[in-house]
Every structure is written in structure tokens, then in C-alpha cells.
Length: 87
Image (cartoon, rainbow, N blue to C red; front, side):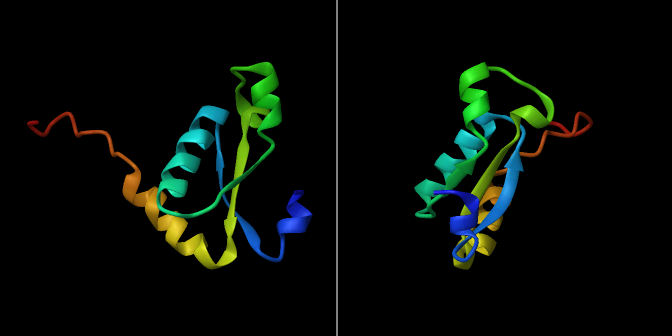
């Protein structure tokens, strides 16, 4: 399925900086019942560890679940601890 086929029902949610990051985000969303399609992931699978724009992977989700998916990713994001605060 190409992105143009998905344009009516799927929207691009975020762009991951690597295939590993995209796979993690995909797993989190799919565990919440949101289907995810990856775009541009093939180059990372072929070349392995890449950086920059060549490593970017787009995550596409159903249009009607985009707001929920974005909230899930924001909720799952772990903020680094402030070094001045006691643990």
C-alpha cells in the first residue's frame, strides 16, 4: 500500500529518526489497538544503522485515531530526570 493509497484514510503521524525508534513507536501504538503503517523503512533494513534523513521512517495511522495515537506517544515518552532533583 503506497501513501497515496492511504491518503484518504491514513495520515502521517510522526517521523522517527531510525527504524528501531519507529518499531518501538509502532509496537506501543499497536498494543493500544491502533494500526500503523511504516513508510521509508526499507533503507534502514537494508543498510542497518544509518543516520540523518536517510534513516527517517514515517508512521502512518488511521485519520480518526491520529489524535489518540499522538497522545499515546506523548504519554509514553520518558523525560530525563533533572540532575538537581533527588531520585
